[in-house]
Image 1 (tube, each protein chain N blue to C red):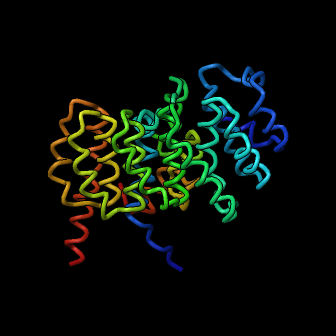
Image 2: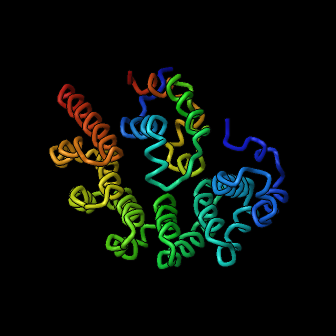
Image 3: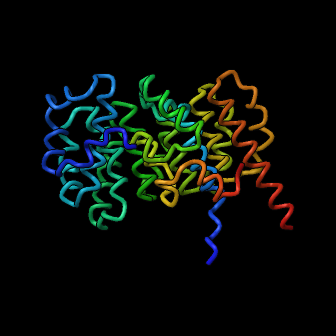
Length: 81
Length: 219
C-alpha cells in the first residue's frame, strides 16, 4: 500500500528545524556550545541529523510524524531535493 | 543521539532528585546546565502522570531556570495528559503571562500554543505590546496557530518591526500559514541587515513560490 503524502507545510517545518537549528536556537534563546553546534552541523551536512539530536525546545516544535527520521529520509518522503 | 543519553535510563525518582537538587548539576559542564535541566524535565514529563504532577507542583517554588525547563517539558507529555491536567497546565501558564521575566512569559505563551488553550486569546494578544521581542514573537506564534485568519495581517505588519527577532518570527509564521499576500514584502527582507532574518526570508520565499507553482500546476 502507498504511503500517504505528507502535508507540505509540515514537511517544510521539519526540514527547516533540521537545517536551520542554529538560527532557531537563537530565536528561542537556547544556548548551544560550540562543540554541540559543530556536531549538529556535521550531522546536518551528511543528511543524518534527526529531531532527537536536537535540544528539547526545538524537539517540542518538531512535527510528530517525522520524529526519529533523518533529514535525508524526510526530504525523500516529502519529495524535496 | 539524545543530548544527554544517560538520562533516558534513569528512573523517575532519580530524575526528580536531579531536577530539584542544585548539587546534581555538577555532573555536567556549567555551560550546558540549562539544556540539561530541560532534558531532565522532559524525561520527567514523559515518564508518567506522576511526573507531570511533580512538575506542576514545582511551578510556584522553583527558580527561573527550572521554571523555564518545566514549561518546555510540559507539552512533551502529549497524549499522557488527561483533560484535567491539560486544563491545569493552561490555567498555570495563563497565570505566568504576567511574570517579570520575559523568557518565562514567552515560554508560557508557547505552552498555551502547544496545548491549544485558545481561551487565552485576549491575554496573549496583549503581549503583542510587550517590551521584549521574544515575548512578542511567542504571541505571534500563538495567534498564527490558533487564529490564523486574524493573524495574517498582524504578521504582515510585524515584518516592519525594528526588532529582528519579531521580523524573523513573522516570516516563519507567514511561511507556515502559506500566506501569499505577504510574499512581496517577505522578498524585500531577503536583503535584511540581520542574517537570521535573511535566512528566514529566503526559506519562506522558496517555500511559498514552490507551493504557488504546485497549486498552478494542479489547476
